[in-house]
Length: 117
Image 1 (cartoon, rainbow, N blue to C red):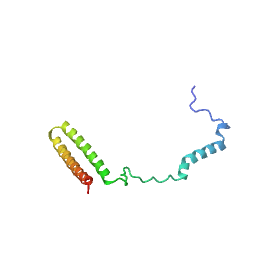
Image 2: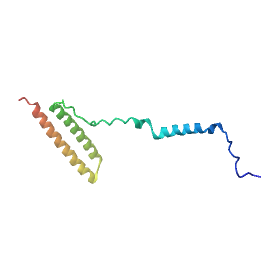
Image 3: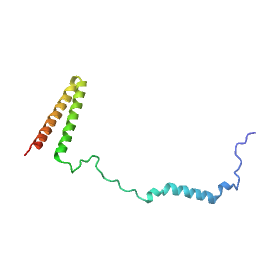
Image 4: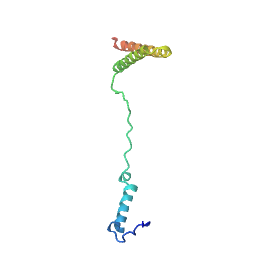
């Protein structure tokens, strides 16, 4: 015949020593409830800019970089506009023209800076 209830536990199991169980419980609670990371607060994050322009650069260098960036943007906009068709091409060509006009303005300012005074 099958026995429905299990055998009673052994009364003096060395693994179930109350002192060892208490120590293990205390270690687990200390680990999860008082982690060492909370004792020492983390340092605040440093506020730093993602992009910075060197303040020691002169105006001509800054304008040359702006001109080269505008030239690259003009070429990219032209390539994308040439690969598109229909109504989406018109606004992209207008954007390319706006970039080109700003590139001309920067070039004109560079020419004025390079002229002997």
